[in-house]
Image (cartoon, rainbow, N blue to C red):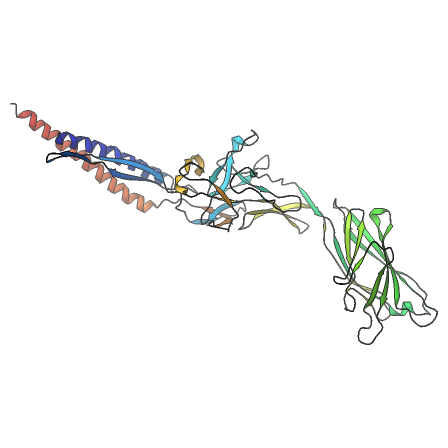
Length: 432
């Protein structure tokens, strides 16, 4: 009956607008929730063809969805591990309860305020733990699978950790006195000690002894360079014969370098000596032949001009930084920085098809499609912003406008029900 269909359609309208009211209430309630995504209610008409010149109201049904692809504004914070995604992509996270239980289910989020907990894990206030790819001891991220979360692990920062870097190269700029290789010289050796750091961050030293060659007459312009390693008990790790040029064009520069041991060669291109100390290989730069850098032989004074080297002693961690490409680096008070993890960004074909969970987290579904892990700033994904949070995507003014529309629509449906009731009453009164 047509009049009955009107009643049913209005009842469906009341239920649908009540659902829409629920989404509006949820959106307004979460207008200050970081990373919140709006819920929307879509109405769909239902058509029932009565035929024979009659019409039956089919009513309306409602479906709800969450607009995960809508992003809120970014606001700055004072915490370096407050993270937000600028553009497409989601951060990999897992639940606090799963860590240590043998499984770390992959969840996703667009923002979070992560701080180290009592176990060192980077955890948000809502209990989500950030995940990433761990770096190897050299600070390099190994090749990881991109279509699965198998390579990801909860990010754990040891705030009390120490780090040092072994010395692998040192360079000395030293002037040797030209008068020391003359036949009338005393032949007194010159000595220079250079500190370096071994694989455990301990301080060791290379002692460079320059021994002049005294000729019978004239000047030899020749020195013997002997290098000793304190970590090896003062053992000789390098022995070379150095000859200097005395011509007008290149006077005082290296003319030739001869390895007296035969196993520690001199590279004329780089100007480096290759040797092995107790902790491993070590290169010593003495300058390129014919160039006025490194070792020279001029005037009558022994002058160590400068010593440059890599490596540092053991230092304390002072700060954690996250760059736009998702690399988490630890800074130490010795001035070094070391990569600890890389945070990839997760992308799916249909972002709005993700399953919404508590704490502004999401999980992949068949509707969202398969995940793929990108380097932040690469492919279709955006980058990661440190010292930032993403605000709620709720537009309160727009929600209040929809609230007025919903209220009017609900009242109108209620009015239709009242009118149908009055018409049915009139139909009942016909019998009288």
